[in-house]
Length: 125
Image 1 (cartoon, helix red, strand yellow):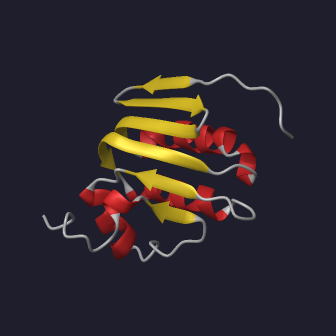
Image 2 (cartoon, rainbow, N blue to C red):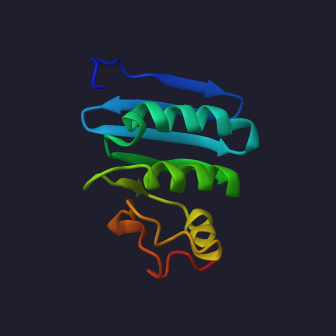
């Protein structure tokens, strides 16, 4: 159901998630860990309208991500329908390595922006 929404901001410990609506985006800054997982899952569900809307996830300010939060991103992308995608923008090297190590990098509806493609040499650390 598409209803008029207002953008939100979530601040939790070492995390800040800010939503924009035009274009649809989540800006994630700080640390995505077990304590942040419920906030991340809620923000992804609301932003993607439970799979009916694609979104950009801006990760320039991401300092840390654990496997549980990475799985939440992959699961949110998998719930998308049709041609919608979840695009990870400016994904840090650790996130890209985790995608490869977990073998989740070919997940349906999940894309890395051109600046963060796997194997571009930037993830050598």
